[in-house]
Length: 231
Image (cartoon, rainbow, N blue to C red):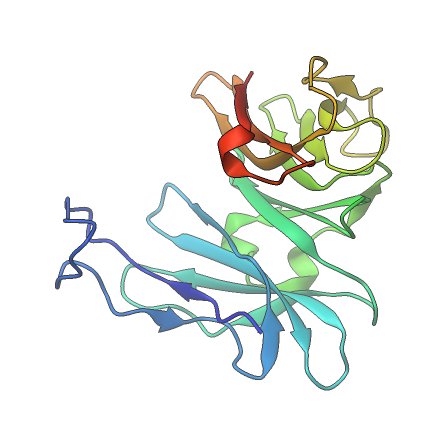
């Protein structure tokens, strides 16, 4: 299993090769009796840090999404905000915070999708019933990121790693996930035998969306033959 730990900075510059008292000790957030997955982290304007990660219970084997938050002094105990069915997968968890204080959470159900999306107000993120019923988006996503703008339009960026139509794609919804636009390729010149990996998205103050990813050579899987792309 993966043990989930977070290092907290005191916002000072530090020598990256020397751990000193400006960093806290590693703290285990995940449940030690469960298999944890890759976490997602976001901060809000009120000084709170929100952490999410998937876990699979060692007894009933049902996947969950766990949540904890840090108020500047201590982390809350982990609690599940979503429980899936036995055999379900929760991969590539990602989170973002909209300007209306809504937390958005996305994940993929396998290495070839679908993408799931749910949301809750930031001050109710610890309440499982405050999260909306997950919306299922039928795209073959390997990784996904969702952003909600001030007009309540949902912008979905996702990567497709497997199959013939590999690349990075964009789709939008104007009705809170009820309907989605035809996916638009953001990586139309991707080379044969390359697949997008390590998708990262940043949103500027004006709502502009920046996307960066790593096109990996799937013939060699060597990092020194890859290409970093930006749009």
